[in-house]
Length: 290
Length: 157
Image (cartoon, rainbow over the protein chains, first blue to last red):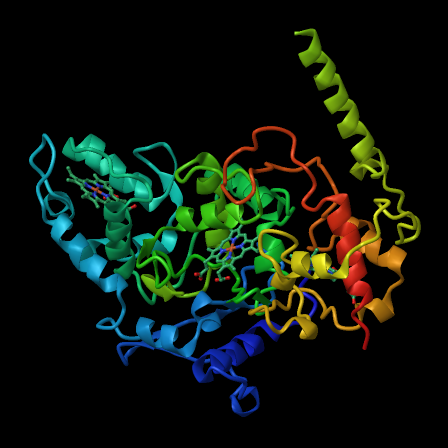
């Protein structure tokens, strides 16, 4: 299942940028080298990396940002322009809001949000208190239900995804470093199996689109590698932050398949596997996508 | 009561004769990347086939293939080769095989199998993400396959 043309992805991504930017075809003049992502004029992101051996068939890893139009790319490089940051601000407020029977806010125990630095880069991972593989969403609801005595948030809901964006932002620029040890190996294997399963009536796997054909257009959309280092992602299409599992659900649905539920074991395991496919790229969320 | 039963019987018989001229998905004979026998008695209609190729809810072939002749339909994909000249490169029987079940011609291809009824992994009800209500019909009907074949035959260099 090796992609036939190596590096075609990056070149095509650079070309896509040209097409979208100009609205017509001025492909020829474009510099075919991959662009740099520098956020706020100072934070340099690793958007191209070497894959960890034995994880995927990818020869190089590319941040999903590379496959978007120049306008969309620009939005993500400036926090004042990135619409996802509005939700981060809302989450900062929630962070300090006392809720639930214990009279606590996130800040009561965790202090400043910056205490979450490094968290996003290593998740999903084994949670000592939950005793199983956990996503950030699961940790947040664990705190809300069992430490604050508050109502859990909906897995892909606005509050949860905003809080995830705030937590993610603390790790921006750090390399994704999700570990697969014995405690989660079975989950990882299951996630990998799901990644390569050709689902639905169209019989398409994640790999069919994101490993074999990234850098190519499917209808109007340029396929990326389907990495999750940029999540949560603000989508111009729906005007909100989107969580990893919401994206997975949409992709599975598009194969004319019965999807899995956000927060299901299948999607948790798939998230673990997909996260390791991006080990080495920077955490770049909250990102901007079309 | 008797009369109602009688007309039901006629109805059922009517359905049977209408489909009798069709080859069912499981009965299609693939021979060396070709399906010689048309799937229906009615010759394919290129205009109807063109619509199937360009319409998202039908064949949606342009999601993956570019077709120069179809510039009125926006956004052609590039996952598969351009279909320009497909009518020169392949015989009618080969085109029928590719469209009915491309995996029989190009093993492991990402191209969907359009005249197949399963088995599938987690089949869904179209693009709803929900489980189907019952057995799924093939993505395209026998006649639609013949229409698409007829259209592709018109794509000459």
